[in-house]
Image (cartoon, rainbow, N blue to C red; front, side, top):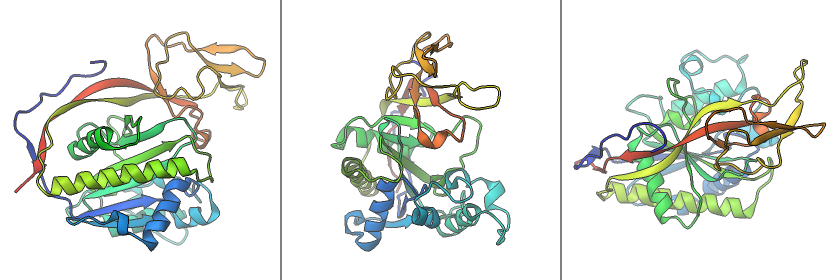
Length: 320
């Protein structure tokens, strides 16, 4: 195993409660169009979301951003579900996304309570070459990890890597954190404000497979223990910059589109405007993700470095 210690694989299943209420969010970012168009379609015709053992509620995360086809209006909605935003009284002067986060929390939460929805999907696109990435808060979310394992084994979509999106020690403030369990889909490459039929079809297939998993779980299916590969973000790398803060180099051609592929010490990562290569100065091999993500320029992130590990999960079954 490349990172961390494997937890013991238990011989008996962990019993988890059934899922009755499931939410599907598209348009958390208003210019990521696969989720926007799918959720708008499902609001008109939810038939393909329907299963016999649970209710699915699709919704548009950030309607104003969707109307303007922008990522957000005032601040990133997908970073606005922390207690500091949710537990204060919203006023008309607050940023729109703070008000919207509180509305979502009221409808599908409250976050961390027994009344919260059982599961939430959050549908995203990325300009990076991430494939059909499955984002989970951490390996401790047994239900989401089993769902990812089921998707990897049964979905017709290939290359569905798992990425842990919650930094260690930090509280989750993503949209899906309002529910008791969650999974975000991050499909790319796809330009902002553009819908691609291939990416939309993949997202649709993954969603169908994930909902099938919930149906099987609710009907009492025993999902056996397994080991699975996943990636943990360990650091974020900014672009090189001039003293005035302007970017002085761009992603190197050898790194572009190489998400989830090994980056070794000394490999080129940036190229200056004079054509000089800047090499990786790490002393270890990493697996970069979100390489040259358009939305991360404002976050001063050229790419994220991850470590790949193997994680053991115990068997699960619906409790009786």
